[in-house]
Length: 140
Image (cartoon, rainbow, N blue to C red; front, side, top):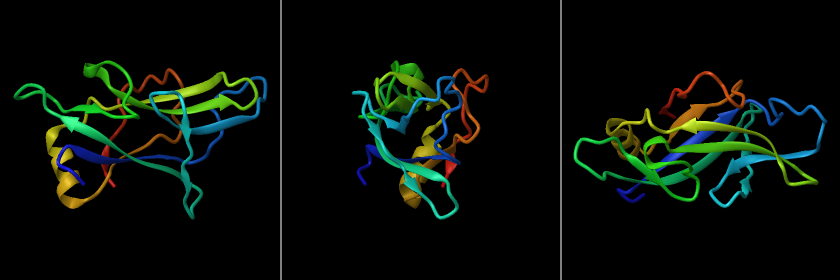
């Protein structure tokens, strides 16, 4: 892995959308910046995992890491990645959950790189518009 990349993993206990009032058939996955959904991997315990990497850079001395890449959405100061559900037939979004990256510091980035462990978050139970603004990132 390059010094300018860091590995990530998102977890979710199932693929059921938090809301789906019309019972639409759906696709679930990690959303890239062009709107495509990347399927996860079903683990033996039923958890769905999404492994990906982002580029990381420091724009100014003392600032938080800035993440870029095909899964990093949002403005520089509030980047996030999406887990998303899209209606299979119409292609319209049913739900999207943001996993904000702002709480990840340089210590976590360097530890992840040195130990070759992904920065991980469990989004089980999260829903769109969740009042918990930041996820609890940890080394997986």
